[in-house]
Image (cartoon, rainbow, N blue to C red; front, top):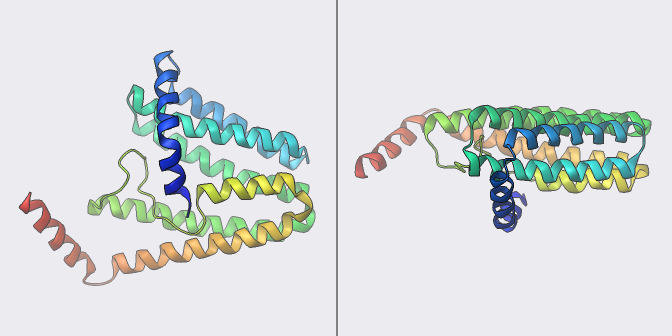
Length: 216
């Protein structure tokens, strides 16, 4: 829900930092790897209840993940790099929830439901991204996936995982609340997908796009 606003606010800072890192030879793949290692460390720290360490590594993961895109654009982005970045993000998002579930047994059911909501929302996201790409819909061309918005996105995930680290005793209600938010996001994406694939909609979309292309 807040991702677009956050990206607009941070984009100038990250772009400058990305160009400077690229100018000294830092590669986007190196940042993606470092981000993944920091995120993995955060998951392990959460699982062992080392919450301060988990929080520091989680922030490091997010900062490094925010920098690899600008560095890639400064040096020349690649589809392989974008692929690894997305896989790493999904792995850390799920792994952190597993870490919380290990450390806080009362929150295990809520964490399990949260992971299920991730699964449904992520599946809808990837399917819609592929369909939008095939249909040539406009989107953010600087990102590897065409993202469809929703109630719970990356910015909300940062906040929730921070709360897990600061308030581990409240992990159960936090997980339940976020599971509901992600579930709503999944429903939003499913509804959008149904509308997109509704019988007759494809022909209308194709006609409209074809007319626009012809007019150009």
